[in-house]
Image (cartoon, rainbow, N blue to C red; front, side, top):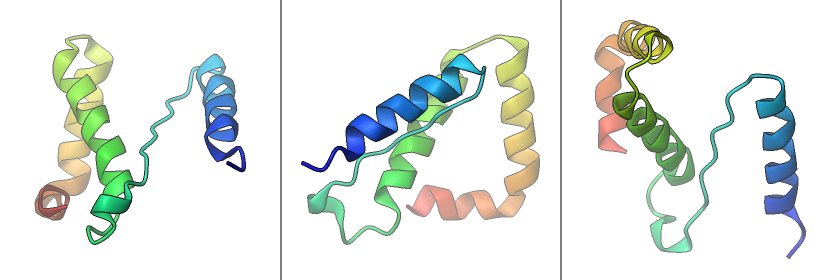
Length: 79
């Protein structure tokens, strides 16, 4: 009701126009007991996008994520 989604969508347009990456997730009141559920949703969509893509950039990003997260990746799985 206050325009948060409209603001986020406009910001996404600007980021994408500059060649950036914009991830978004929507807070679901039914999942409010799950910490960072919106962030988890956005990251999950991003990972699905990487899995579905076979270009060299997605391979580089996936490798960098694996390296950066290492053993901490298990915490993302729990969410």
